Image 1 (spheres, rainbow, N blue to C red):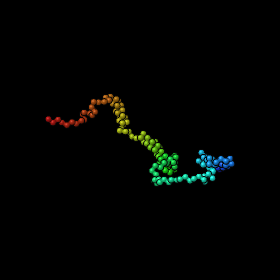
Image 2 (image 1 turned 90 degrees about the vertical axis):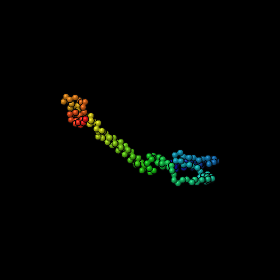
Image 3 (image 1 turned 30 degrees about the vertical axis):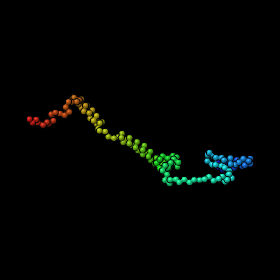
Image 4 (image 1 turned 45 degrees about the horizontal axis):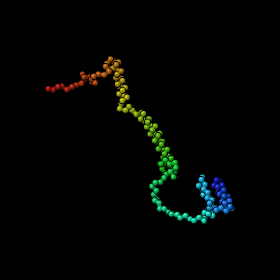
Length: 154
């Protein structure tokens, strides 16, 4: 509808300019919203054809800009629908699976190098020795009476 009103206004402007004696070639109007160019058809027909040069272009375009076809491209695929789904899959597995389940897995790993077990065992041993009146630490790690040494041969 807007294009029809635009054409109607342009025709009225051209008719008014033609009755006043102004050249119609000066009346060239470009629309900012629809990029339409309105010019009188008589002037367009008299305009000399511009020389056109055909360039030989490489059929294999190496640097194709994906943003021209899909301005919301995420860089996964040329097709916009496949691109959006690939982005969603990557972010789902990247955040939901790896970060959430990965951190849960690491939190519930067993005791690393049995450090927690060694502390609990030492605390249990200290309580046992204090309850029985034994020294907490001895100079001998093993009972010397139970160690069998080889006999001296001279």
